[in-house]
Length: 297
Length: 263
Image (cartoon, rainbow over all chains, first blue to last red; front, side, top):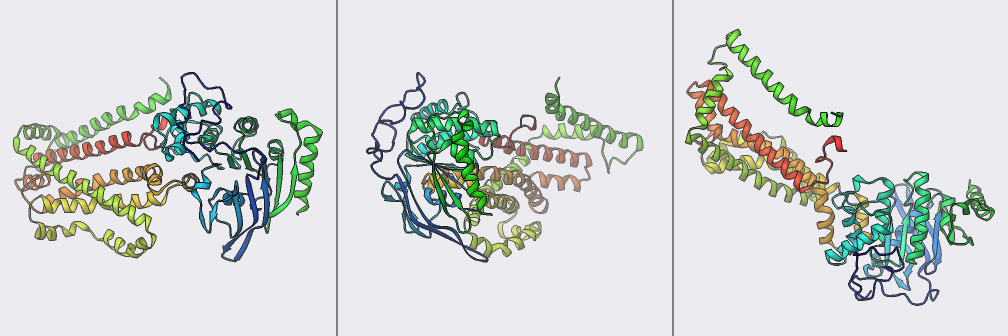
């Protein structure tokens, strides 16, 4: 991470509002990535996770091997308890694996049981809950990661304004989280994760708590955010149609012990729209994944 | 007028009505039922005495002494209570180790210590401030302890996933999320602080509104006694209002600050 590379996504994302000028070269953003497809962005090799429960050890994850390419959108699906969230938490550095290696751009994000904070700086995380801080306004919440990176107040709030425009929250910069609806709060959480242009976005059922209509809209928006930001996305969900709609590849996990059951490519053209969901191709993939899931019982 | 507005105005209408009713029944008991004025002076007599006392310089000296004791004692209690609460909240084994001692300390009637404080710290302000601190710091400490433990897990995850430093986590997460608890403790603490100062003054010394209550009792001046109590009630309300107002400014984002109609 070099502090004086130009803002990578400002131009690619929503058109900048006049007056919302960002001093190029002042925001610490990840270094420009080497050529796409050069190497794997995220790689899990023989990852195991064993919890010590009161009744004995529980194998939460067993022999996970997965390689995710640059800019790829991967969905993780499976029943509750199959280890999707555990896998994401290991990827994000919130939880150490029992064994195995996790690398981002070839660098291990774990040094023993201590995580490498430097490697983690390229990650953005969106949780099941928006987890906005109630004492900060929306703009302050979105700018929080930049504050932690020492970006000056004026610049980080300007960036927050720009991100508000990108996720459709213009006019709510000064509101407190409790004044917003669930969908708007989750958008702010996404904006917060995007604030420092992470090259990898990890999302843990971010729309699980939203109603179906809002969820459809959020999925469309996420697709365009992904296209604009070009980030690698790992998206956990328990909804198969949602997983297929968003992903380049869908990884199906099976429980007890948590392991990869199948990896399915989704060759549907982008950008996808709500009509995509009614195409036979889409429905075939969904049906096949459902069948695999049902086989477990 | 819509319901919401009416709901907000309601206390402003109901409180004067209740006050007038209360004073009316009081006056009725004195002038019609004929309760002895040595037992219950009429509200008018109390009012006269109050006006008289407010005009005297010595009254304000007593007010000053009591206010100083309460403010100093409360201030120390906030600092000590917050520090101890934060330390015990953070270090679980320490909290477990001192828990029995804390409970013992809490259940002992601390007012019983006043004579000892007089022996140790004299008849001056110090012994009263000590009692004030001891009474007021406890609810603050307990609330802060709870607050430090109640930092939202999801919020912690956010800070951790951003690789936040310890200091930044304290500044942006732990402190703001504990502030409402500090204020909840302070609102109880300020009431206890007033009680501590007055009880301390009852039992030893020659200054303060608590002393004045005892002095009026000894000279069988019932109207004067009531007047001092009115002054005490006003002082207590004023101090409580200051704490509540401070809360509105410091944590405007918190639910306890919102008016229920806006929620």
